[in-house]
Image 1 (tube, rainbow, N blue to C red):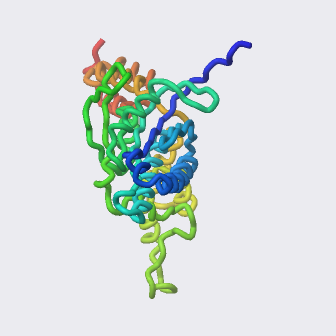
Image 2 (cartoon, rainbow, N blue to C red; image 1 turned 120 degrees about the vertical axis):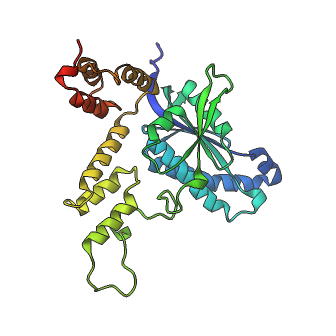
Image 3 (cartoon, rainbow, N blue to C red; image 1 turned 30 degrees about the vertical axis):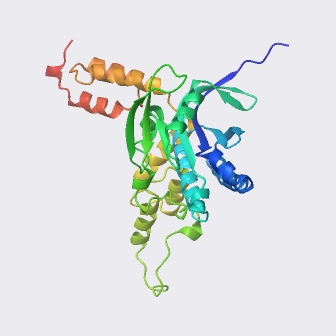
Length: 315
């Protein structure tokens, strides 16, 4: 029988493993396996929660695929947060720290497994990450840099094993995120009614400013990348002061979850824009908008066109 064709798909790939796993096994084999099993319950739960799919596990390694770059990074951050909290209960020399690498790439799928350079790069990024840290590729960084409340350190071009071209690597600065970051394991989830902002003791029954409550609600979700939280806000405050912004962010998240852009396509668009952005010829700007009506620079292109007057038009 002819073998079925391999399916190809653009995904965000998360690769993780335990730093110094051999040392931990040598120190306490049974205890290490017990800790790994407990920690895998955390990682597997969070991957499922963020709509990822586990594509392979071998020993201390995890490989998962996500349809959204945002979901993959959010999942990685929450994994590191929860595991850091769990490690507080362990003796220092027995703590289990995962390294995580995330890449976006076109992969081949077969029998639930994924293959290709995109997978290999994710694995190499994992190897570059600090214990308890996260490294991401340029494609992931470009996709999430303006949508997440984190800072990234540019590690430059890195030559990695079995990959012909150097890979641009960024380290996610977990230690420098805001203390009130909503990625904290203890952070409330505003889409649950019980977790809406509560009143201080002694003011129950007193007059409450509805606008103040709305602002507190918005402040608790304004950096979110979860569609459900903006939907909760819009349901609670259909005429609220942040409705327009909530709808814009909700639409952006939904578009991201439907399809993730190939970094190569972005490079092509960027080159196109660079060739026309300084032009006074509206036909060139119109050509860009025709090809990329919702492109990264479409708003700028329209502003440029609106600013052109007839006497400045060139043939």
